[in-house]
Amino acid sequence: MIEVTGAKYLQDYKVWLEFNNGKSGEVDLESHLWGPVFVPLKNIEEFKKFKISNELGTIIWENEADFAPEFLLSHLR
Image (cartoon, rainbow, N blue to C red; front, top):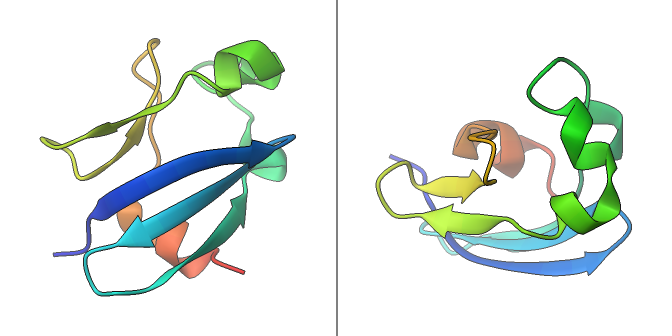
């Protein structure tokens, strides 16, 4: 099971992520912030407030928005 083990805000809507399979890199989430739960994250100050959920194995925001770790891994640069 793929899980996010490290995360750091970079700039704009870019986050550096590390996964439990040893892969790491940058993910740009700007084009994926659509729909009711993600629109509030277009406010960059809200976007920056993510944290890692050990329960879900991915990054989450205060409004309960999250991306599946497999989705994030597939979008690494």
